[in-house]
Amino acid sequence: MKKPFIIYTYDYDPGIGGIKVMHKLCDLLNKAGYPSYLMPIYINDTFYVSDDYDTPLVTNEILADMDNAIVIYPEGIKYNPLSAKNVIRWILGPANEADYSTYSKNDVIYWYMDYYYVESLGQRENQLMISELHTDIFKNTHLDRNGNCYAIRKGSPEKLVHPVDSYEIKYHDAGDLVKISNIFNTTEKFYCYDNYTFLSVQAAMCGCISIVIPDNTKTKEDWLSGSRFNQYGIAYGEEDIPRAIETLPLLYKEIKITEQNMINQVNQFINHCNERFI
Image (cartoon, rainbow, N blue to C red; front, top):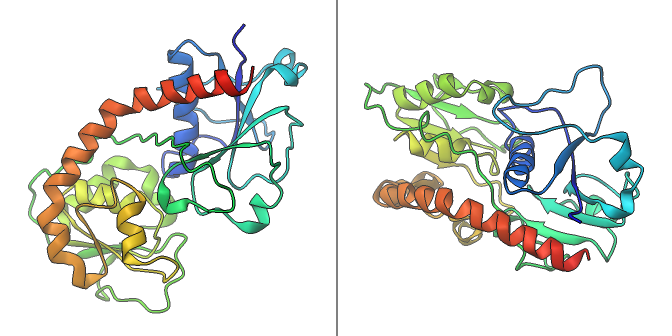
């Protein structure tokens, strides 16, 4: 009998990558024939889901038999709020010691990318990178470009380096994918102060010069080795722009490879769960 997956997450928000990929994982698991459900972190009158995904909410019957379920928590969830026997921690962003110190030694750790890896948690071989790339939206439409844009989001810049007349992309603007694509297709440069947002990749996909402003928590080498998307087409500081422009075609190739390999990664994840949680 297949153990159901319970994914502990927030309402769907197209502008927040970590939430979006958790909903997408639920959809991909269901498509693979493994029952998967969402469990709201907060119980409100309305819990938003995507019409494009197969993401049913967990039932009371499944919650009554937690020993026979597999719970997937994002990295920011402390302890084990569902008192689950079988726990996976999916590290979708920078792991915080205050959070991961509450994990059980029996928890299975999965990493979204090497950039987030913390040696004390180990299990580096467990990789699960799922992306909703929207290549039909984020592409270079060869429009006239003028001016620049920037985003701070979760960044904490010591100083701002973008031109003063740059357009600011606010935190929740990222949910309007068509609007964001249009911004990236009509501006020359994108200055990104949030070192972990997917906006830097989306800008590059649109042909906008994408510049991540380092926050000094990682070296340039860490950044370039952290994700296959980070290696190409994105400048790590303004002095890195020539390399970003030169390697942009390789980013497009990596995106195609990722789309092809996503299902394989999900299947490997399922097989590992079947072996680990007998």
